[in-house]
Image 1 (cartoon, rainbow over the protein chains, first blue to last red):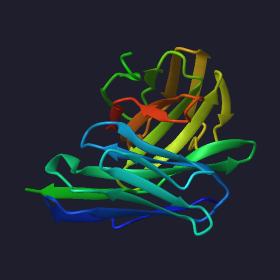
Image 2 (image 1 turned 180 degrees about the vertical axis):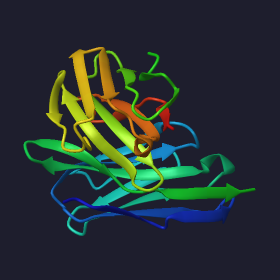
Image 3 (image 1 turned 180 degrees about the horizontal axis):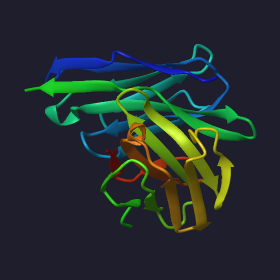
Length: 114
Length: 113
């Protein structure tokens, strides 16, 4: 059974810091990995998606990397801002029976204070 | 596009009552996911449809839960009878097969008293 772990569970940093959020998964036979952001009381917003054949994806101040062999992904946030405060979740799409289903981590709750 | 639409946004009901949650996916998307989010268990996949056909329902907790997708623009998740432990936020997400990206709705917060 695929298990997805996110470390740290919570993080509080001053504005301007560069951050690394970690996601690990137990079964490396994945189809893709997706990072999401969730604001309080809201749904999830997709940030970056990395296919299994890719090593990284970038969007603005965000960079996500994938190392399938070690079962790890990192989300790098450059020059953090208070508006980055949210919970960040990673989801791994993996084979289950005859289909590929997503399994989510519990998330990292990020607070960026001015 | 208006994004994924879910209704109702909030539902408060009494134990034993039937609850129906509704979802309208993004037009053109061919996959649809129902999730449940709680503090205790995080975000759990309940059921996954592809081209209106249920592909994986291994996450549906009990026979009290059922989901349908009669056409490409509508899906329902029904709980009958509801129990207090069903209280959670239920999310619907639709997927774009070209990009494999999931797009989430705003969720339905269900409280069963």
